[in-house]
Length: 328
Image 1 (cartoon, rainbow, N blue to C red):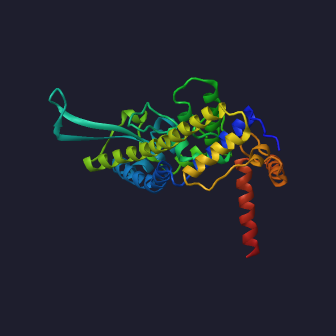
Image 2 (image 1 turned 135 degrees about the vertical axis):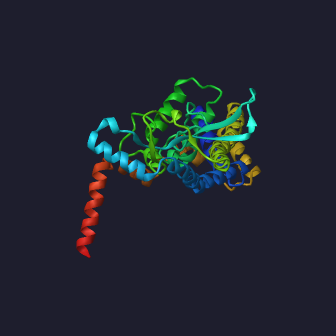
Image 3 (image 1 turned 45 degrees about the vertical axis):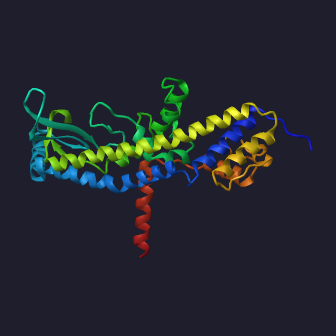
């Protein structure tokens, strides 16, 4: 049988299938570090918020907030001084520490529990790196690229990057174009709010805390940064591997040479994955088998699935609950 000649379509397919295997390589310690950091975030995020809530409620007792809310109900906007917030300035003064002028040093940082909150304690340094790392699988399951910022970190201003970040932000609920019935950011943020008293932004109301509490909250920032860091290190490694594969593929004239490259790579990594010509010829550029009848049927069914609004979903849920009660 004549050898199949290599072309750009086949190169793209081999690259994408190879990347899928590299991403799922459980022997990769960087991958495991990322998943460990993700699991730790899911466990400890609520614990750090409990610490923050303790500090906030000590400064703004519930009975005070309730009283002010009552006055607002009587007098309206002039008494609108209680707000539900999820970011706070915490500060403590250590008498044993002095600044360069010899004055007692005040330590102060901004701690933001929002999905796109700052990682370094600055109110003005919001970013989406944590959101992409936290919801990486959800983005990937919806054919979105959670790794795009890492892949394009050497080329920050380009239409390709903008296109993917816009799509990610819309899905997560981090943009004004987000669909109301899919808002992961809102659902995430709503878990970590409590009432504060004040008429200005959080930067003007530093809340006193102890040194131990402050240091505990600094661990919160470290935890968030670690998730971002492990995500970056993992994907940077894969990015370099794919660069090597792409460079080699450019020099090959025949498809079997590219398949041998991929299979040799898998074997060297201890993976059981293998490619053959049918894998390449019967897939599209993303690696999806396009001639499998079930795949085609599933895609058509998904496109025709009714998209309900948030209100419609709530109404259906209530209807189901009512029917269950009647049945009992």
